[in-house]
Length: 462
Image (cartoon, rainbow, N blue to C red; front, side):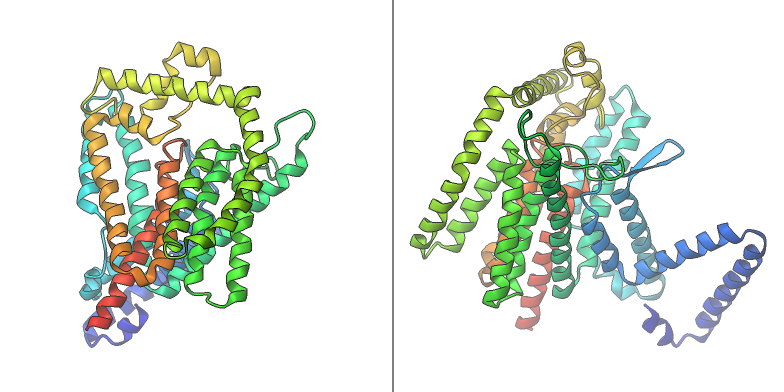
């Protein structure tokens, strides 16, 4: 951006920009004399925005590291925003300013900007908007659509895909995922030393820091991070080729797997099982005998854990209650769908449907949002919304599938990324992060890898 400015031959344009900068600097000096704290804050914020506009990948690294921090909230006059979304909005604002600069001074750069599966997303967003018109809370539901649905596309798909332009940035992004996963796993491990091993069901769960639970207070919130971290860490083997480094990566992966198993999340266990089977079958498709020993060792480790899981689901109230809660939510979703089958009740209305259910409030207290992507879209957006969303998701994973099929020599990175992003997607059919960055940013990383590898082969052909 700066290099382009100095290479510009239009003298009048340079003078105009320099004059504008002088006026800005003069305004800053005058403002600082009267409002020093406010002016210093504005200057610092502007400097951060400018830096992120020049180096958007730094913002993406921050987003990845703090991706699990969904429960450290800031309140701006009644608007509650999690720390991770605040970072994302700042980085996205900086990137839009970068686009504005390109529009006026470097039109060629605009051609490189990607809008992933944009037509399918617009179809889904249109269906959501139509459902809002049939809602009893039109304005609230439209705000929900912008706050959650538009943000996940712009902030957690569009932005990362366009910021991750090279293998170096992709590699650093995966290292950031490893760091993020290690921090969450460390918190989960620490929780084991704070529980009563005699009188309560012990599992890996989040812990509080100074009275705040930054990643939330539910064990599933750790599990969904590990679902991604396990396979995104494996993807680093694409660059670290020495035996020692690969063994180190394997140790980290084993640690993440043990933390995931320790959450005793049914959905996480199921997803991990499917991921592992696909990974080992694909990797060892020509050497099937090699997986016998790892399989036997895995079964030995899992046997006592599986017994503990059975006890959780059958003898502990927490397991039985969780199942009954999900069944009741499914009933609420189905009833709402039958009332408005085509476009649904409106975006964000699921929690209101739960609040209106006397049976749920009597049994579980305060209303909760949907514990599953299927329940959510079925009730809020109807069959049209389901079809549009299915088309959007199909478009995304079809791109990943085509790349995996075409660029077989790069399976060591494409397959783990596909399994990590696919795993978190299916996990959100049982959890609550379906419109959050925890699901969409891993998908964006996978798509970015597809585009980078595609461009690498295109350069070779030319």
